[in-house]
Image: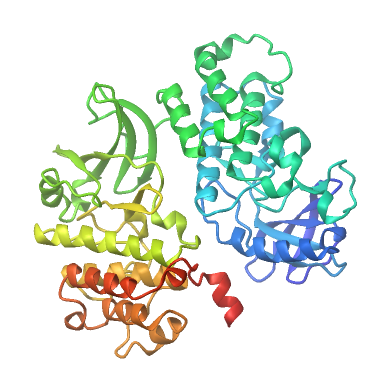
Length: 529
């Protein structure tokens, strides 16, 4: 059995031709983990060595409830590379496929969760390359997690266990690979994952591979007519004809399910449909916490998705007054609020739905300088508009910045207080500083600082540490960010318009080559250090 420093191997969870998975105890934290130990031949090639080191750092940055995160990696005493993941008591989707007591609605719920994980990874530029039932875990509460992002399936075109030359290397599993992935690994893209997902969905709902005959099963009659075209679109041989994103597939699944995949609501004794107009179609629960819940609904009359947020009255901060004002404001970088409501228990807002996720989901993504400045200006523009109407955001952070499309952002959740219990609730505001225009400017600067460096600024009198952290950033830009994040509010920009003008002036001074240069991500900075 393997010997891995810092871990006590207990038993084998699974074994295959290319890897073994062990249950172990991480001695430093006394917690159970799963360790996947890959075949030593996988690092005999320089290309694999490089990709192994590079991708493991990217994958470790993924933080999503539907992804099993890689928390450590290295090489065992026997010279075999390994990855460490939290241990999740679960079964693979392979085991689910063999059961005949899993309802169609539960299977749709599984498919939706897979899509959420894939969409998150794709937004961060990471392709899975080996979507298959064996890499999808389902726990006993029905929670789905993907494993082996970017690391699974190193083998040759003939599925021999030994690595051949680089030009024969394939990442994936033949039965699930897209045509372009089989032809050439370098052609694999997020659309290749969509193809593999289509095969998994076909197995999940019809019990067989696409080329096999589908046996009639009355349990799926309710959804089969709608599911088949969607699955077929994923299986298009030409990548460009497939759905453009996992989010698009998820939305289609939600429309097909019509909310029937939702189990009992876990917030108080409410039903998700309570306080939602009867003509609205509840599609999904986006978020729940002790203070409220956020739902995705469809407005049949206007044929659009809506976000309905229900917040307990003792935890709404200034949101009621602010969101009533926002119903009369239309700004390209502020999420539209269509209406508000209130009863004895909750305050309700109805706003537009943006399917491309939030900035929190993209913190590990590398942006060009031009893209970064565009987002920075959009943030400042939204704040300038809000402040001109007497609106303070008060809780600006990456999760409250939504993407309408690539690099086109909209701000949301104005006036709602933070929902965390951590001692670090004020990550985006200096301790003891009250809500104000200057506090919003600091929050925007802190977010931009984080995008540039992968870390948050540390409030200090002279900002020496922040200056050092930004030492690789062009001087003009560094001065803008340092001023936005000054510890003394009076030394920050007087308003968001001034910050936006400073960013534009800096951008105008850069030549095209610099403007298109990729920013220093955490990976690049680590190399520089």
